[in-house]
Length: 341
Image (cartoon, rainbow, N blue to C red):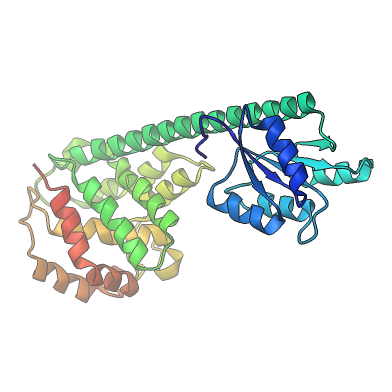
């Protein structure tokens, strides 16, 4: 919430004379706005939230308690400090207001010095709260960016072992997000997959160069070692409760499983394969087919489409293949954006 140079106090009271008194007491130090009903107050709060609300309890159309409930129920306004103003002196009313989220109570007729002091104190605390929230948000953003950068660097480190540019992980992670959204994943889930998918081949760090870089066909023992990059990757990532790492581990471990159950390491089939791994498997192969490798030429787009049509229900989940093909232009645009140098 943006704070004005002179803090804004919204006085809500159905008695015009009470508003005038409050304006006279507070006007030299604060910008004072007024509403003569709870309904009008809510309109003002929604359109231009104040820094503090001085709220009368007893009003005819909507009580101060009802206004407070509405303000506190809205995440956009819940943090605004509310000070109740009333002629009531019973402790039950004070307790009720505080339970609803008010920060303080003042009684009418106002004692000028006391009212100014209370309003000044609570606005100062509110400003401090806003600043602290901004600092926490900024620090959190920095930590998230650092974490994502480490993940991308590790993913590219693994890719560099058998791909000179390392841009494959960038392309396949963005393509994974595109397929995820197109297949019905929420935006948050798709974003998480974008962040986790660069770790899919981290297990290659544990495969010897003589096998990983061998130009010819692997023998059975070498192929068994190559396939172990899935379990090595899962071991590198480890067991964590953080959602990002949970998804990264699933992707690393299961991105070579096949829809028909003929994949590895566990021979899972269909829905038993985590959805995130099914998406990454598709994006990974899509980008690899269209890219030049030391052992292959780049396939054309028509060749690639034909391949995926034949692999529906075999290597890949048919629904995901169709989602990718329906968004082919976007997937190809991602390849152009992160093209190999």
